[in-house]
Length: 157
Image (tube, rainbow, N blue to C red; front, top):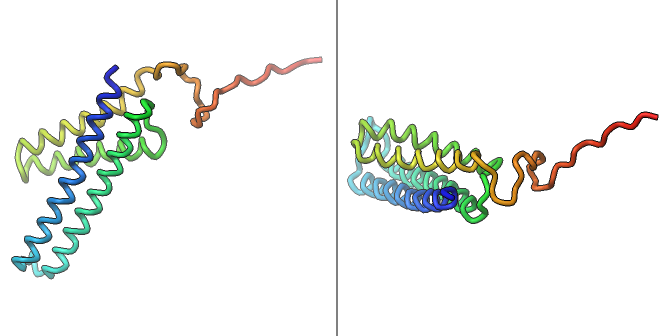
């Protein structure tokens, strides 16, 4: 009942965050490049380029997390395998980012990170609570959607 809307919200938030992080880092790269800033003697061109590359990488990462959440919302099935690993890693990243932004940015950014962390954890936990309609509990041990058949009883002559 709550699972699908939570998955949609998580997908939208992660898409928003992907473009926000990529755009912000791209902007910071331009600022460093135009003002020729240097940090501890590092080359400003290297700093600007690495900021842009980091923004694109993190943007693509959050975009991948958003696609996984979108697939969960569309299919109404729990994430499995690689998708589950991606969402768990996104939860860990948001926890770490929340810890960093508390001191660097302030409470508002920390609260946002914790809300996103809570949404991702809620997405992961709600799909474990009960099977989706039409599925049996524990009926898919193979992981490929095929029904599990019990082993045949041994016959004695």
